[in-house]
Image 1 (cartoon, rainbow, N blue to C red):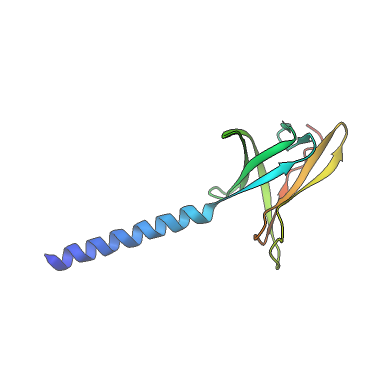
Image 2 (image 1 turned 135 degrees about the vertical axis):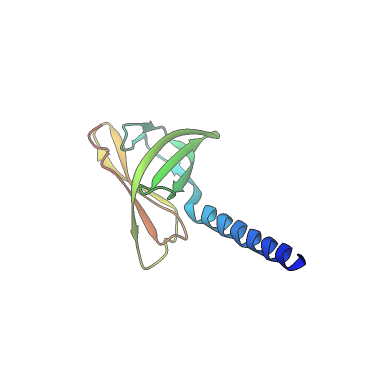
Length: 123
């Protein structure tokens, strides 16, 4: 009986650790600065300011969730492109999109992935 309890306890610990590791691997959150009014793929225009951006890879289509003042204000699908070297800084890349800049890429410091946003130049 004691052996069964120990085996069950160890099994539960392994399952719990596995679940925690999956949860950690599926999201990454960083703070970014948007310096221009900028549009993302769904047509949402993000005002200049500080945003928490969460990369969510839990589904087949990765997304970036944008939060400001603790509230989600936008979500954009992204394509992840792996690079050999890790990014040395968190950066937001833009293209001119008429009256509003268009966010085309976001890179997180310490990550070896570039996050390419879908074309938002034609809302």
